[in-house]
Structures are given as structure tokens and as C-alpha cells.
Length: 283
Picture 1 (cartoon, rainbow, N blue to C red):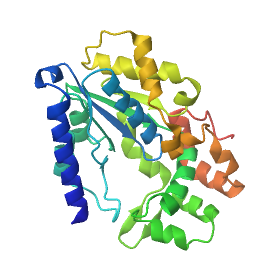
Picture 2 (tube, rainbow, N blue to C red; picture 1 turned 180 degrees about the vertical axis):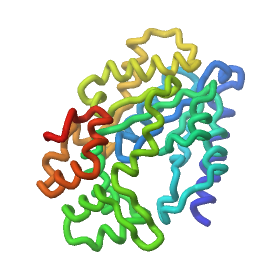
Picture 3 (tube, rainbow, N blue to C red; picture 1 turned 90 degrees about the vertical axis):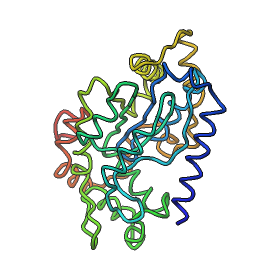
Picture 4 (cartoon, one colour; picture 1 turned 90 degrees about the horizontal axis):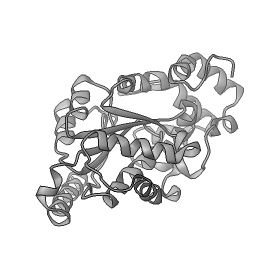
């Protein structure tokens, strides 16, 4: 019962902020902002950037929990009714985030007028490295934590993050099958796709794209664009984002053994090519 009570309190606080932080008539020309991602792909980074819009207009960071397809503690799926209710309660100027598949009903909800949605992804090899650490020590409520902590080494945990497993009633797909339901976000003009790596090498350009997308989706911004991007950049805090803290891409090269490389090529080599991270299997 503790979690529903905690979530209800968050919703109450969010609604109070909506009433006190801005007038209703100011919300008319604001889209809701939504950061969507494949897990461990830079979620915290993107949510920080979107929270920076509170410095550009009367946006509200809802601080609500992530909207996710599955329950973290059990791995059971949320009903579509629950997911759509959580998405559709976001009003003009609200900022939310989640890990949502490109199911047709979810696509319709995030592509509707008045919604500016973003999708961030990362090299899947770095994703599985981050995932193995996260399950083991970063999330005490993760449904796989007990199993991962029974394994003798990080190398074994990394293998499971690549290959997946069937554990009783919990089915954890391999990395390709986990990513497949997200591929529908690509080639949607209503969704801006971002690469985590671009925030490391082309941060200013990426932030301009984030701002442009919000404007294209209904944010009537009339200020100086360069100043706006500086404000978005100023809220990025690498220390609060484990994914971003290392400040580099390609960390998988320090963690993959030859066995991991061979497994990944077999299971997700084609995925890397589809996402543009490799041109072939010669890596």
C-alpha cells in the first residue's frame, strides 16, 4: 500500500504546483513534454534537459514516477488502460517521462496535438553494461536483482543482460527482443529521436533540436534561441545521472570479453546495424 499512497501524494503536489506556479490562461500555448527512452539509454539526461524548460516558460516538472510497460518489482505488465490514463493526464506545460513501447494506442497518445515527445537511445552494448550494474546495485526493487546477486561475477551478469532468461514466471527477453517494441518510434515526425552519444559530442546542436521540436509542437517561444539553449544546458547535472557521469561512449569495450562480443554479435549484431552503430559485424 505504501507505493500507491506515495504516488497519490506526488499527484496532489503536482496539481498544487499547477495551480500556484502558473495561471490557466498561460498553459494554452504550451505542449506537454514527454521523455521516452529505452531503459539505461540516457533517461536522466533527457529528463534534466526537459526540466530546463521551466526556465523558458510556465512549464511544470510533474515529478511523477516513470510511466513504464512493466512493474519493476514483479515484471508484470501494466494494462493498456492504466498506461493511457497516465499519459493522458499530462496537460499543457506538464513534463513527464517513461519507457514506453511503440504500441499503436501509445503512439497515438504521444503523437496527439499538444504533446511534444522525445525518444532517446544509446549504443545497446553500453546499455547492457549499464543494465548489469543497475540490476545488481542500483535498484533494490528490480525483479531480477535477487537472481543477479546470486551470480558469481559481473561477467556472468552481463551475459544475462545480453541473452535474457526465463526465471519462473518472469520472462526477461534478450537485448534485441527488448528493443524491438521501441523501433516503431523511428520515422514518426511527431517524435524527435535523439542519441545519447550526441549529447557528449554535439551537445549544443542536440539542445537546439530539443528546443526546435518543442516549438514545432506548439511552444510559442519568442526569446533568444542561444540563451534558451544555454539555460537548457545549465540544468544538466552529470553527478545525478549514472549513465552520463562517465562522460564517454563506448565503455562496453572495457567490459566485454571475447565471449560477450561473440554473444552480442549473434543476438544483436543486426540490431546495431539497424540503429546505425555499426555497418557490419566486423567490430
